[in-house]
Image (cartoon, rainbow, N blue to C red; front, side):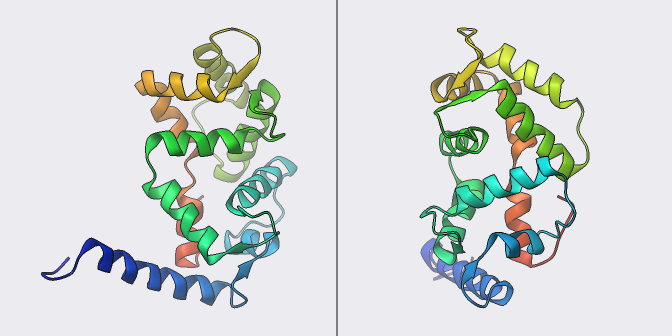
Length: 186
């Protein structure tokens, strides 16, 4: 930043640039699920990957109108890229809680991780190994479900777990693809 340019000025300039890119990719100003998949370069994906992409889209679509508008897009960018750790963990939890019941069971976590593997195409462990390890570390009362409190508490006290969750479920690449208008290696 040059002299005389405040952080707010810099953010405003960045938002104008993002707006131009968003409108170039989506002239209507409202991104549909189909356009979202097209921008990400996702064609002929597995049912697991498709479910994950739809879940991400629906979480970005904060007012649940079936579209991601520019304000929702900016909110998602700010949360995923610039958000505080506890905000990201709450967002990740919401993503994994596919049925919205306030708990993540093994089936949900396994399904999401399989979907992420289908999109990313690489991982150091199988979806089953990952799911079992997460439940061993987080499910302190062994009830077969992860609550938001268990999830956040475990991630905050276990640095390795936090790093694993962050790397495994980081969506900044998805947002960067939308920002740039090109598909990178997601």
